[in-house]
Length: 193
Length: 193
DNA sequence: AGCATGTGTTTTACTCGTAAAACAGTATGG
DNA sequence: CCATACTGTTTTACGAGTAAAACACATGCT
Image (cartoon, rainbow over all chains, first blue to last red; front, side, top):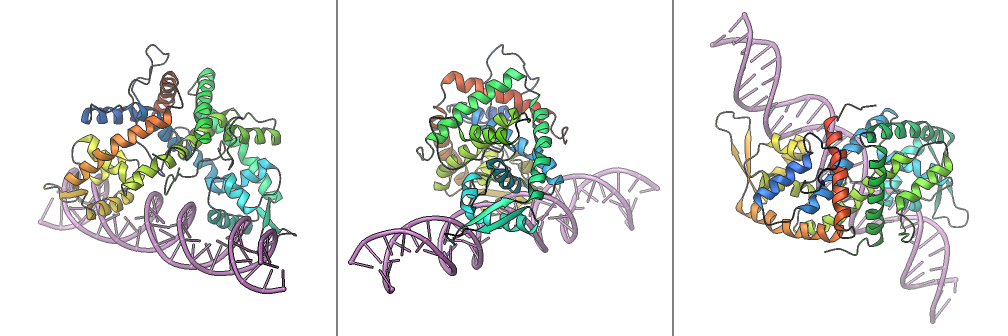
């Protein structure tokens, strides 16, 4: 996660797991240990939210770390792959600004990545004829082939990692996350407590 | 999320939950839009894993971004708070190495953070009497008070954010994540596909 | 004891991301 | 038109993290 980047975040395990629910992992995850520590120090606090947020953060950190390996073999960072992927999946040219929004990163970061990817022959740039401030970016054949080569590998890998959950579990998880996410995205910025 | 990092670390890839911009409330989350794009371009691929991994990444990024605000008001980055929190919740002194493991970061990063936090009077250092290589770190009173002041605020904030899911939903989500996480942590490194 | 080896921590060199300023060009209102 | 404000992109200055090397010390072998 960050952590930040690599960020691990405090986590916890309170009552999260319902009784009797199927598998009962021999031992808890790291988050549950952290939550236990907090509860010992501050018994008056409701550590419930840590059980969810801490685990989301930790899962994200582990999954990203694991997925980076295959990517690096192709000589790409995750941010670079995200950029190429955005161009590939939209299927058309994008401006730097659109690319920034699409990949949730700053314009400056996109400028730098595009520069490198262009030098590597994976992306091409073309100026807009009407508005000379804007550029249009597209994948080269090499860029498209690279993405198309990596993607199935990446998906197969993800499938393997997630197979620790059964099909129903994955479906439930995806559903709950979709609900959480759609509501978070809906009111983003609203809760700046 | 870098997250890390100033802010949210870019989330990630394949499953890359990354569409941008606009909130498109009524219809699903941004991840489902991305998945739809990929399926249009590569109908033969099973995009299932993206629905889970992409959402975990995106949720992590949004939650971290949201939680950073309250932290910054206290003049701390998430990484710094993690470090102070580790000292607070364990209740005893930790060496730099232990702190690195506890916060899932590199020793070098811990060295730098401890240096800053010590200068700010939040952390104290003491050398080990037997083994002069090691140091023991502990919170100062100011450091402890800072953590104890922030924590309830942070938890209240998390509770508010998660309230978009009902109690059962939160419990189910925590349970599924706990299962996934404990298995990922169990076999981490095993799947370096 | 003396030296090779191992461990805990810090330093160094470098990458990458960001925020804010700088650029470059477009659109508008008088 | 021409000044002004605005938008899209790039540049600049800097902060934070990492890996690998450097340190500093401890330990074990002979």
